[in-house]
Image (cartoon, rainbow, N blue to C red; front, side, top):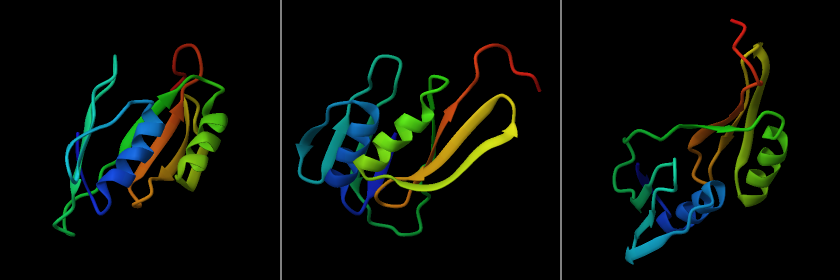
Length: 116
């Protein structure tokens, strides 16, 4: 995934903490988070166009761990936007924003089959 950012190094550091992935910087202004096993890689570069789209990720954590993970991400620099805890029985999620305002969700699915 490519991400254009006002502060590529700062935003990459945030996502490195979120994903637990080390970063590399092959050249100034370019930061890469290599794909982790079962995950995906990210590349951060300087943003040059304000009209581009923002990213939105849906990340999943084990049932019962969402609240603790939200607290960890808030400490890393995320901003809480809203929670959706009882809209549907098969997922609860919290919407957060990264340090540049890009929204992402952290969801947990209950054990067992969906009841929808």
